[in-house]
Image (tube, rainbow over all chains, first blue to last red):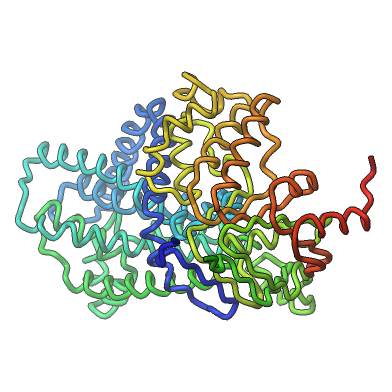
Length: 279
Length: 246
């Protein structure tokens, strides 16, 4: 006898197919292997570049410290500037790399999409998992720097997982929107490239978000917080290093906009998903 | 007692080919508005139903909608109108070795390909030895797939597919893989699958294999169901109308 749970109904009038949640569970092992594949493929080539992987951020941080701290005199909220920068770069790199990989993922995997059924969502969200490895390796460097500067762990570290989840939620929203748009409009990758280059300067990587409050005002600071990466980077700094209080106002605003971004991205993806194979 | 495994009701599929795929122009130049999307009607009002254990062969010329039908049944693409209901776990084999990555070894690729086709990790683990054995690749299984010949890659892909245990199988012509020895092995493997009471939709140009393997036959012509019925009768009619060049 056929088990009832494997009944599939395809109806051309369904706009959203929320029943797919059961499909995600049925295919969860596939997501696991997508992630494993991504990690294996990127790290099998990465061991050749391991020297560069350490060397290039070190140089980058040295230059940023020289330019923004020594020359421009940007204050870093009592945090040693290289460490201040490193934590910001860490969160930003996860965001950027996930987006860069995911944006083209539906296009580069179009061959599979047009040949077998599986939850399409797994393709753009795979980098969200595999890039976590880079993030955790980066955290080891943060620990190293903290020991070097004699900074201990504070109880604010308890809230780090919350900030990390917010980072993942925001990035999920971005990859869902961007991957979907990139498949439909083949010029969108240029727009996203441009957008990300602009966002590097907008994000509080080389300067503290507090600078906005000081120079422009609290209102502008709150509007600035609508860009969730602001709260995330400041949240990373405060929870990991424990030097400054956690910016709950930024995190609150960022969580709302991040969640909205993620949920709308999810619905947009669900809606477009069924046309993927035809594009 | 037989119960319907596949019910297709009034399924149509229209492919819309958009001339403009450029967001910049869409916003700033408005130039695409004059062009209506080019539409291709791939399937028109296709209806049929299959009982559990039926093996349906689908024949038709190029562009008559055979692949589109399989893609709709396998949920790769979505119908423009109509309903499909499938009872049982569905696996579609529209291609051999989907999702293989050339830098990963054979074992990794078996897991990726197997889970992609709908197996769980446990199911693949349980059949791993059998799959490797059947592929005849031997110790090379631990080397990256890029070191395999194309025939070996196909054999590996076929072996994974042949060990699927779904109730409904959707097959595009997947027989012609590997050398002669392997082909014979593959065909007998497929035949055992066909005889295990699975519901199968099989698309092929090879009339002989349809006659041998299928119980029912469907002829598609220009996206419409031209004939459906018992295999011998339909195939004979088809051969009379389209005399193949011998």
